Image 1 (cartoon, one colour):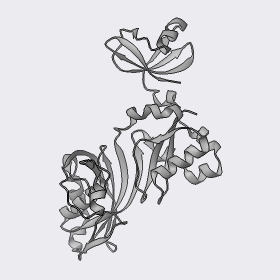
Image 2 (cartoon, one colour):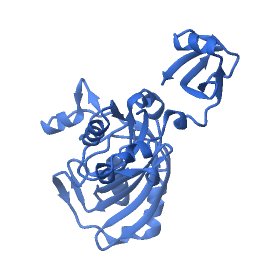
Image 3 (cartoon, helix red, strand yellow):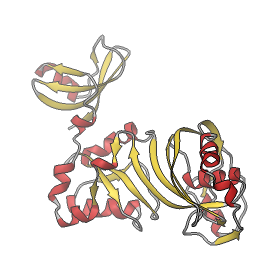
Image 4 (tube, one colour):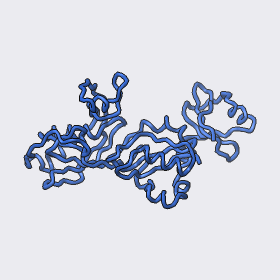
Length: 287
């Protein structure tokens, strides 16, 4: 079984929990393209079997999140799982819809973001959350991110909650974004809910729930995106039997094609993925 399975990760499960469950069911090698925190739900693409070889093509995808920001409190983890460090009364005047929309729009484009201290980024060989748990201070360098789109979806003035949807680049920390939005509004806040609705072309509409999988294991095969389908937008090269043998043995074949990724076929059979560079075709993923 080789391909990609798009799982709708439930709350209170780690990405590793989901990988373990699918690995146990399929008895295949299973990986993922980026973790989701236990308090986050949504799209988690899993790579199964030789689908794990596709990882390098999937790690830089943009993402879309539905986010809930709660104002008036600051936590040490910048989310609802952390300890409350500070509370303050929120001036309801800042919760005027136009004001919030303008603040959200101010985050569009490329900017520098400071990742949260409770994250897995490594500094001097240690993860940031390891410093945080020991109460140690460490200098965190800002990182470049890009916000492609951000819009207000729901405003709950009574409970001081703002819900918005954001499309952003890889490496964007939504917890930090929430704190930055709150600060620009003139208050404090934390990320109280997060649902990832899209990773690259993988949308939550096409995902499958873990509960459904556990009740019916056949859904994995039914919902599996094959490697051929994953690269369906790439051009194809059809090899003769003689060239296929050379190709499978690792021989680089001369092809005056544009340098890019190709689907490789012999007759009508999908063989795998190859790459043309400097007019030479070399194998990459072979089924």
